[in-house]
Length: 401
Ligand SMILES: *Cc1c(COP(=O)(O)O)cnc(C)c1O
Image (tube, rainbow, N blue to C red; front, side, top):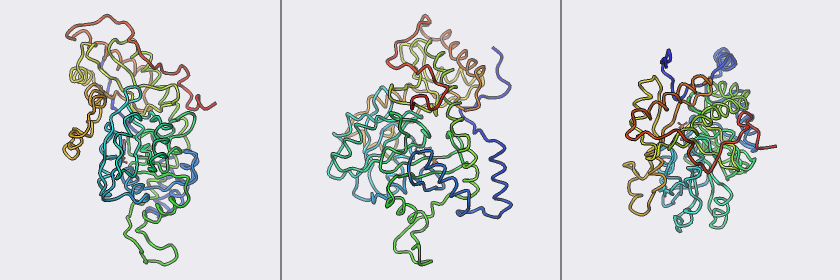
């Protein structure tokens, strides 16, 4: 196996001529701050993409969650339920507004918040649930929405990793009261740094827009009836976003193609599982993930070291929130066997939309070579899996028809 000419990164943005053209247009026009035609065009394109009425662009995804919580008046004294396996930004945003996160374990099938464990986490102080669609796979929203309705809780989708994913043929971002996206450089749609709050509720949209811009009165310049934020996205960021939206469907289709190339190869490796896709879901496979189970005879550190030698960058899964210093108190009241296992067994493989099939094959060859040095090499037979990736992975919209 010849090592690649350059390191294969976990992610790199797919930027084209249009992105450059629109950014230069901003430069030439002088509209480089938080007002400009690209900001409104990006908001319009993104709300249409999510099947919602309103979109409010922000300077990053974390503050989109801050803004969502502030818009719903979540604050000190409130508890917010969220997934134990997520990027720290989800939990941090809850702390930013002064509320306390209450973490719920993952379900093994989708790696997302387990709907069966939510009710036991609800207390009189619970105000909202922040549902994370991890690594591009939607959470099982129907039972979550039913529990929220029963207890009068708001549902915020943290869709930062799942642009365009479908839950029962519906777009993520259109399922809760409010949803938040990130456009960081390694997200499926990028603006460098950037975020978006989307909602179908006119009142919430108006309030989010108001709080985003220092809570300034719309008719009285410099009259601020409340404490607001500056969470605006720049026209420069939005210019990249508008260009990305022009080929969002192609990017998603490409991501699903890459996942398909991985899935058919990983499924032949014993003791290793590939990213799930539930029957009701169309994942965007933001990350192409594997779980290295003990039966494989491999270790996560061993696999990562060997892939690194082959020039392949990988990432471990997130640390479960209950294991991080700011949130370690969570362990005292609840147990997290599933998310802790996922956190220990998970590896994210190169997942850029720019990957070709030969590179995916090279990564899997390198993975397969790990068995030769494993403690107890196993015969190469397929591992049983409850989920099989759909056979028509190349079309982003395939499950909508
Ligand atoms: C990326 C991400 C965010 C935050 O996005 P930034 O734009 O980096 O602030 C929030 N939640 C999840 C799950 C993410 O992956």
